[in-house]
Length: 462
Image (cartoon, rainbow, N blue to C red; front, side):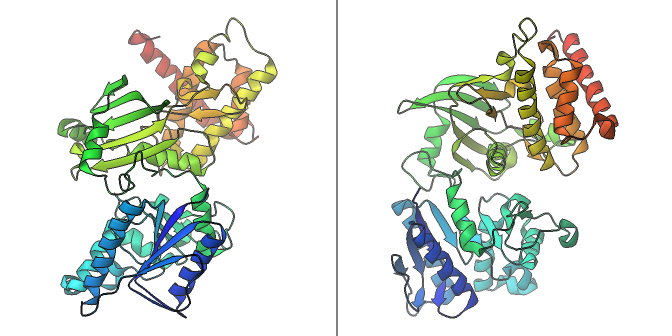
């Protein structure tokens, strides 16, 4: 799919390293058939054929004020031209991808020097794309730069990407960095990474005509209009509402977060639990499953606004999954009308491989019941994982692994699951290794599952 791309660089002077990477990346995008617009203050050198260059340098204006003018110009152009992706080789607000070739400004500028206007502006630009609340993906060939970004801005590891032919060893870097290659090198620099990124589903694709919606918190009128959507309410709990609506004959689900309130926020922290305050959690989970090539929801828009976490408003729009059936409904007749052994093993194997894939990345659903798996009716081997509201990455995985596996086991109790089925699931989940190698883990899973059953009986559910 050909896309409209916007590239930003402060100035292009032929012969410098950053500008060399800039030109190579643009040429690769042009060769792939994408439309390219370039925004810069100054261009000195040969122009790439097929690209449109917008040079907007102002004479007699301090350089740092020209940077601010360039940032505003790109922001307005994005809204007007509706670019699919904005790529920056210098840090300015509103980027989708930032190629961090230059050293981190926060690392270089310390103390009283931060009050100098030009340094203060550059720090603000960096903070706008590297902070924890931004969505910008950061790509660099230098671990030193990534380390500085992680230390000064606490950028989530899922947004830090290292371009290298080697494997990223976290024990050597002492920080968590998500390697691009996931076991294999891309081998072609930033241009190859960008082309791979453009081929993936765009989770920040705007829902409607305004291209700035998902990237800038969207215009107030559009945000308010989505927060006031009406449709079939599916769930209404803890300051969030899920409803189904139709647009142009297609079904969508809107998850609207109005803020959990101070009392609920405080109760979670006093219980040593991180509260879910935004739809960003689910949006990040969808992005992770997409990166692992695992079927899940298709997100079409996300935005949030508000500084205070317990008052933060946000929404996530996803397409309705059609021609699917939950595994809870699919397995309803297993006790009275059991399927063939091959069919049972096939489903168990697919389920175990799916759960193993996310657990190996230390991501956990935290609500992993059979009803949250949807089986595609038109494809035998395709299962969608839904209801990702609580899915998160956890550094210490054993507790959450047991929680997920015990919930899945408990939800399968009433469907005639035999000991043979359980042992086959364990073998698939363990990658072919026998049960005895992780005996204590699976014993705790079984105890936890029976504890969930007893709790349900006490509450009158089971």
